[in-house]
Length: 191
Image 1 (tube, helix red, strand yellow):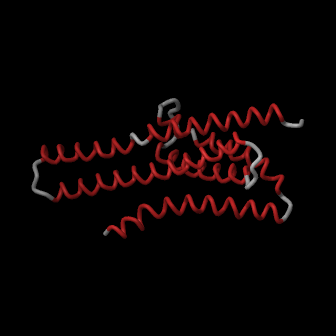
Image 2 (cartoon, helix red, strand yellow; image 1 turned 45 degrees about the vertical axis):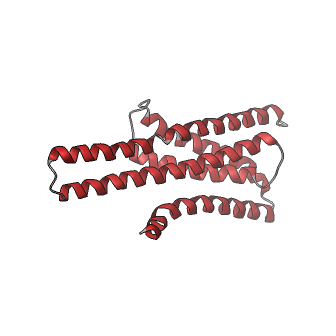
Image 3 (spheres, helix red, strand yellow; image 1 turned 180 degrees about the vertical axis):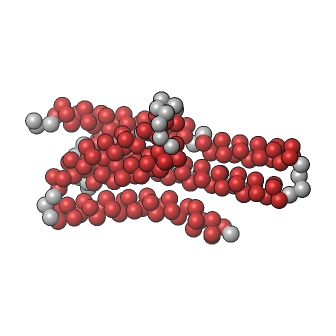
């Protein structure tokens, strides 16, 4: 049972993170081999744009916009965030030129890991709630007793959603370092 749980729930998130790192190394290696290192500079713009677009989900969640399915926007948030992170990691490459860009890169990796963890926690809590609901329907409990049980278990889902209170500050730290990097780059760019 525990092995099945790890395989079905934990490994996909870990594999997504490992794939991000491996693809970054592979793409950066290919760019270096074929003399396309300069492309990485522009992938920073693309990656930043993709990450900014991923925040449409956050705007919808906070009811600042009303269009779009929250479920579909969450899927877009996850995809655009991951793919944007890939572009930014390739942009950063394996070069160490300055501290601020590396702090931004590291904080972005922490945000991606946090996002994958949150996705796992929330999906696990929702699945647990569904399973409990099915068990309760099959039981001989009264409707009132079932509602009490489901209320307790729904609080579990609510507590998993509080993970966002960790994810959001991490995202803000990443945004601050990224913005600082962008401002410094604009100021020091050789136009």
